[in-house]
Length: 257
Picture 1 (cartoon, one colour):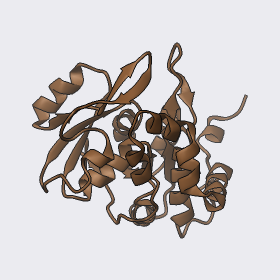
Picture 2 (cartoon, rainbow, N blue to C red):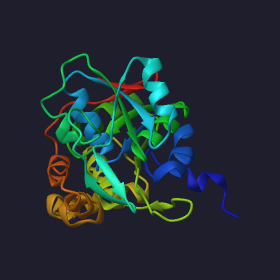
Picture 3 (cartoon, rainbow, N blue to C red):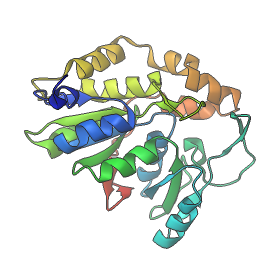
């Protein structure tokens, strides 16, 4: 049987692991955890926080989300999509939604949003209890997040968590999603001062450096799914690298600058 430290990637100062299990494995042993959900939660968080908003991550398809948003004084945003037989289609919802294009250039400073998400928001809530400082990373703010992670971590490890998606089968098992792997790789590639990245972190960095990012995201499962739903604009917004210097930090359960 492997010792537990194998799964913690013990001995490495920069670590990458997938999803909720990755949060549980790395969180207690890292000074900083970066949650990466490129399509679209952490991209949306970056777009919102860059305009001076705050974001309360909330569970998806959970009636308690509305109660939590109301209790916190946050405006609950819908997803901006409707689902029939698990196939998404853009809804005719007006105003702010989970979609980053609904927020881009449209959010007044000081706005407090409650945003639901099946992956990134769920992982953010789980990471909040790990003892690590939690950042929201994506392609748009990769270098800024990398620099802040190094600053906050000091000589302790940094963990990067590609969120992944969910197979729509019993138990909703993790579906590794290349957009999140490339986002994680972009952050890892921008991190300096780490002398011992884990093999998992090294591979993510190499994958990002070799990737035609925008083309891959457009043709990946998640990108094609969103384009088919009529929201290709969101994929394009999420595919741009290092256009934001915003670093959303989770403080008391709320992402803010």
